[in-house]
Length: 478
Image (cartoon, rainbow, N blue to C red; front, top):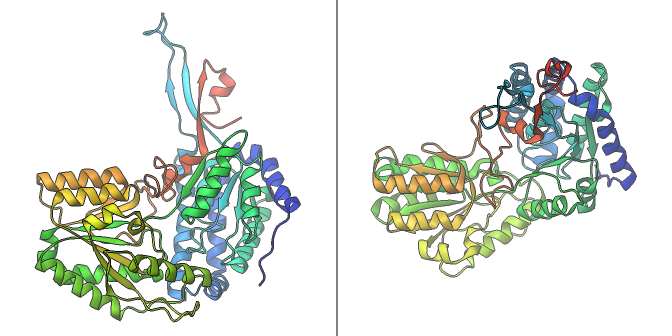
């Protein structure tokens, strides 16, 4: 199906509908919001067979992966319903008045949170359900009391339209405004720019490439009245294999890492793109085991031909960089529809630190081994990364000065630090943090996964000496 390029009038109509629905949705009860979220989750499950078929036709991700993703999407929607029913939508802090002069005396102050207004939500390419029309950004914005205007991803237009149709059926059945969830599409950047520039849009949620996200972030900040831009822009997710880990289970860890690199043909924002090894026989053993494991992995066709071309270009750039040795080549036959072959390459810490090109994400099944000689070099490698969604530390079970230094550095550059397992797979929970310092994301103090994601779309307001009628609303906007 051909991608529709929405006109300026169509984009304006979607935003106008969202703006018209904004006040009523901001004032809606937790029960009303929860009923909508649960209804959206239920309609996905009820139409599972059709949605998985459409998603597979457009993404080649396979029924098993897509069924799991649909389950995750419904789980998120239901989880946000539970979260707001527990009181999070209208949480507040209250300080009673104290008679007397400041600083001891004070007026009665209540700190509440109000919804920002219509949110422009940009769907991701790699999760056609969980980070798309009814994905986590949409769920968290709706839970916060904000209407959403979805910018569909051109990689899965049929699926996006169908999910939007189902969402509209739920809104109609619950007698809610159709403007609570809006929809625009188009392959041109002009559609996204027009959406971000629209004065009625109050915030933007984006998951995608560094290039596209940076351009839209600039647009959000160039407005006469800049708005929050919550961008998740990708990451190389370094993994540090400390000597005790490799000495104990080099082969097992290599198998786990190979599966993580291959998962989704590497088209995952938390895919491990760098693994740091201390020079020595155990590192050689691990690298050989990783190479052998990757050779046996079966990848699938990438999401779009353009992504396959970008992957091939990234592989050529990486392997053509001075100081990089190819351990397992990813030979391209020029077929944009052929599954990519995993790449494994190696370089030194000195080269990695000196050359920015080695720290650029290759979106696909590619991993660069960085050999180090000391904990000092590990810290320098992490600092060179600058910002990442994740850092994984294997072998940090025993406390030492070096382990503490490396751990401290990891927490300074990443939003999530793992001490076992692999970074692919991001749990939807209250304690999750999916975001990190630049260039991983634009707002490292926020998360796009987990129930704290709702906080992005709520602005604090202090009510001083509020009248009784307002205080009785207990944080619910008037």
